[in-house]
Image 1: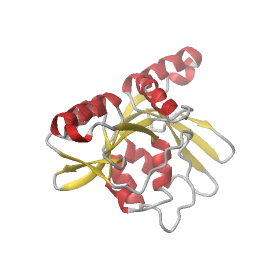
Image 2: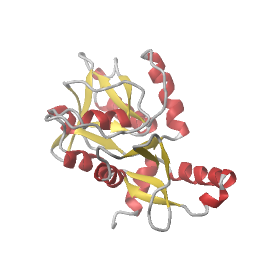
Image 3: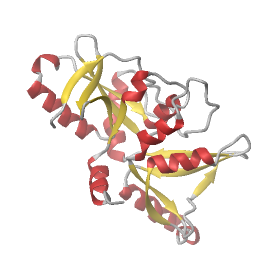
Length: 242
């Protein structure tokens, strides 16, 4: 990884652990512009169950809110469809697993939500990352209650968040996969061993992050970049032309 790694001062992040749905909330005057959120999410491949008209499988939260599952792993989406086939075969036969950009489905949810109706996205994590995130949250006195964990690294004398200089731009990476973050830590130890004595991993939920960006805007949030998992990276490379 040919990047310049530094500990950058930050303005803080939401780290609460509960958010099952990314419900649309009134946007404040200081919210991150929607185009910036679309751009942040656009490069992340995810999976949904859709019918032959590309309408996603959904469920009802209340009279105004319907939700659909957004899977971080193709295998998880297939497993869900297989289980649905056992429970409700007549419904499962109408659906297939479809690849979509996280930014695209988020944009759809925004455009199809208003005061009278809401399309909520339920982000479904992999079991591996849930189990990896639980002890990290536990160390901080928190409990995992659902959602897709993202990993962020803190360190240096002031326990600031990790920043990476890449293509002339300073970014704050949030990792979908703990193993990927561990590779960064190992690389950091080789490059700057004097700054790794107090490294700390924190877990932030994807839904909480998006909800925060919908309400707040500052320079730190504009530097955030989502770092794909290995599976996501393979999908990106396989579908680069599209």
